[in-house]
Image: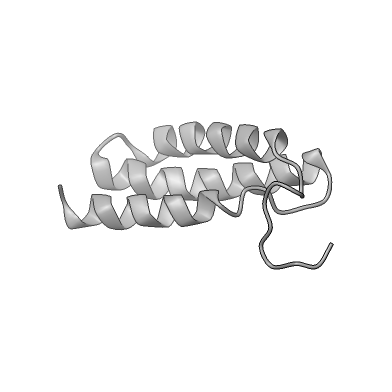
Length: 80
């Protein structure tokens, strides 16, 4: 595997963990979509899929993940 791909995959994995930021499902979907789009563009560009296609896929996955979680499922060290 190429070094670019592994770096992009590591970045996407860590950013996807932040997809649940926010108190309401809409906020989490929005932040998850934005983070996923950025990570998807990086991975898409590194793998030859294309940055636009990667951003669309990553944005969709990030938004779905953010909307499907609640603030109690992801504890990022914030006090309730």
